[in-house]
Length: 204
Length: 56
Image (cartoon, rainbow over all chains, first blue to last red; front, top):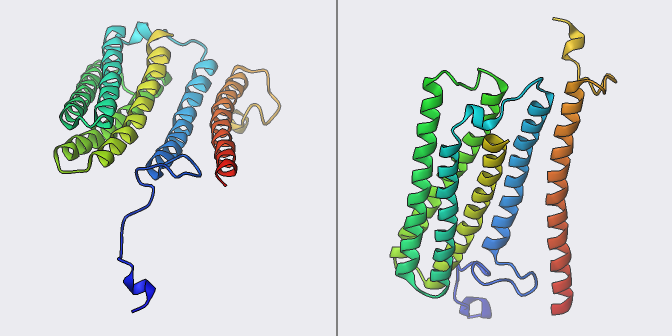
């Protein structure tokens, strides 16, 4: 037997959890940061479209004249609370508290679901009132911005549920902590985008 | 439809109209976002290069 045959075959991907010593990033951390960079460009393009439409319009309504700022505030509170519970999940999994981490992840997913329900109810009310995207550019950009964001929340909800379920399994704690931290980065990004949306759609 | 109305106002030199100003504002916004992302990526690249030099 030669040396290669003596070496046990391993499918373990290096630096999936622990950071590479030369870069300081794990694969997951680098991947999610690159993904967030592309997401920033996507929302940047949408915000740029908003600026173009608003600046070019002869007149533009104030957000609170057309939208219910109370609903926007409620959605903001839901997402801000989910950001805090996500932080609690990261801390818990890093400290090895699997049950507390799972609970915090489940609460975060629940808050995300509530956000989506409130958003869908708001959409339904707008559509019933004839406030559809084709009515004018305000509604077009409102539905485009908040719709793309809601899709991101939906994606986050799916990933949060998967991580919460995996927290119940025999997944090693280090891997669970890495997964939670990765999804947390995405989730906080979604929170920050919503804050910007709340300001430009509801408050200006 | 008048073909001129379909042209980009900035491209045909009508840079003073409201749509031209709107286009400029939109482009400026996108440039700011792009610059922020590129600066962040460059910052990470420099940080990795420094760390690699320190490790080796």
